[in-house]
Length: 486
Image (cartoon, rainbow, N blue to C red; front, side, top):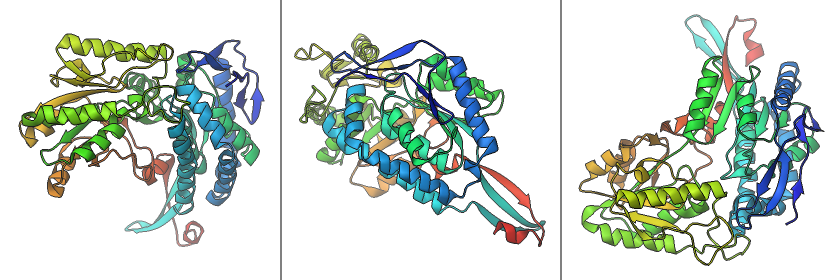
């Protein structure tokens, strides 16, 4: 793939040269070669984008259109994107190393998710009139305002659509900043929205690093921040937004526990761990990175987990037979390798993996790793690694398993594997987490997703993900005005 150079930002409905002369180079994690270059936006560029979004929201016409009219424009954009899905999939593989066979299955799902939000918006009333002891009252769903949306690198195109479509169909204006590691696919979305006829300033695209993100979050013209990323960055954003009471939606880190019960089916566990931990090279916030197994059968279940790790073919992501690609960057690989060494230093033992594959000299590859002889106080069991590293923990009773699962600063996802439906339900209710799966790793785009504790605030996806971009307004009515709100 030849190097893609983007030298403009999308601001106010136009492609504009940035005031900053700095740029970011996008490095392919499989070849370690440059695949793209984008502007590293300065504060003045970010301010111009927010100002454009502010004008578009305050002056209209987008937020004053009917939901149906907004959905028509966004449907045209999704249809345009649909014609370029193969090109986008190849770009995501080049940007972040997602194996091409997986990218070509996963990328079309973004368009389906976008259409789900459009259908949801069409079928959600913008107001409802309630009879109260004080007379009729209309409760209106109005757009929250200008949204600053900041996305991570581990699912760039799909996450972009999931953030952009519900905000826009709700009537918001927005500034979208993709991760500096994976900014290229976002330009396709901006082009599609422009061609579809989105009014100027409703959607703005800025690319850049942390300084651009900080300028975006701090801008007083931003009404809401929607951020997916690290817990540390989430805390910084929360501090910044609290001063002006800007709305927040934070989907942050995780250290999810999968509880394997005595009666669990080995094949189901193997498939669940393969999907829930090792998919996307472990670069998933909801990954099952702690695997809790009965102490009496630790070795038996470890063999199952090792088989899951070793079932992947690690290599060139453009090879259609590859099932696990590299980590996204040199920095991320060094982070994962440091945790692997830390695990050994703490006394854990790698039952498989634990290093860099000898046959892959180029690219940011790490072997899928399963640690045993571990306990829940170790850093490898408490801190998010964001790589293909599982920590096996043992328990003596179900109560202890639940206690271990809850003994975490995070609460994003979790799972139980058992053939006992009543026990599964009991454990699902007992584990304190925002999302939970039974006998599977399920990412359900039609249901709310998010976490508790250090895993964030608010929910994305599902009807609740749409509601997150609404503000509620109560209008107390008279009999004369009531018909205008029905």
